[in-house]
Length: 440
Image (tube, rainbow, N blue to C red; front, side, top):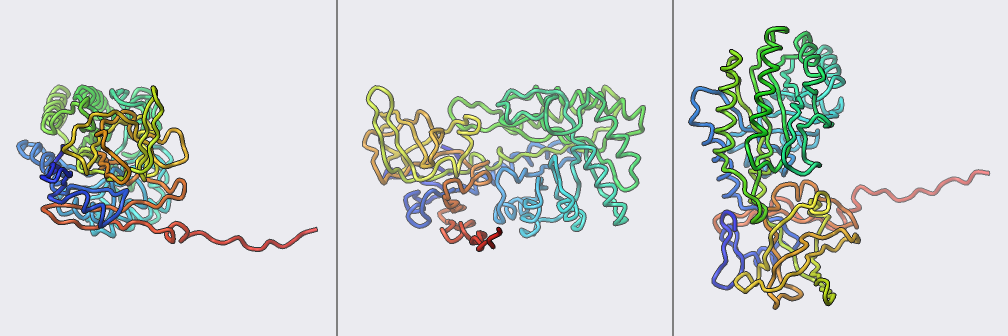
């Protein structure tokens, strides 16, 4: 159980003081349910972890790719955090949510000219530059506009986080950033320093996701500070900002053992101070980018159980009314989740089943081995925990399934923040086939 989740006297799962069966009845399933009290608690943990370090400047920027809607961005805005976006669509959402542009950072390894134009138009706080094409394009665009833009350079420090290969990003063979060891990063620093319209603020790295230890951050910081010392002496570069990214792990299942937020931040700050001392560098402003660690555990997906298939001696399947279209992570990189039957939460989970989705794919398996009561039947409600990050944001229309609704719950109140799609929504942008002229 996470946050405000509890089992009521009626044997049902409650979130935010509301019976999940009531949520399903009112809003339908599949349904993304967010415990906003837990989101606020996670945000506070990051702010509190930094607050005791009065000798440093810092920023916590929510990585909106984890979950981005108007309501979520407004919640982040009201908390006082900064914001990371990775596309024009995320930037547009942030602006429509009233997020201050000067507190927005723009990531991405292939930003288009239109996306950069929007960022320059609204004067966002910083662009995290990823490659030479982007640096050159950004300098030319700023020159035409007679405008300056703050940039950070994303580097790959050669650190391999202990996580799935699809979400490792700090190793040398990565599509992201400027490599340190082969000289690309030094050339990028030199270019940005010489560019008339770019203000080089600092360095960024992100070593991966679902990280359960601090050693990867320590090694990345040591490597970057060593190069920053070299660039200070050879190029005159002063690292005003060191952004160590995100990737802080969360507890998806009982086998996951993430550190407390305070442990990550304490080690990051200590290492930055030690390494800057070792190299006679001024301590830079420290930025972090939590996404999953803010919203992941706060999200629960509710499904209605439908058909079942029992294969004696092999397995029993229980199918739900969603699947890989609303949660691609199990199929994409074997992500694991825990679940309970929300309408029988007080009954013994004495049977092992496989939870399958309704998409026409053999790989549409949400949970390979889930424990449920033997009494579980068609129409019962299944709650899959910790789906708050990369569920809604990676959802698709595969098999022409409509996207689920999203509900925020807190203190016994539910607020619909994304309405459920209709079949009419599915074809809203479709155009009928025009009659083609016959040609001899």
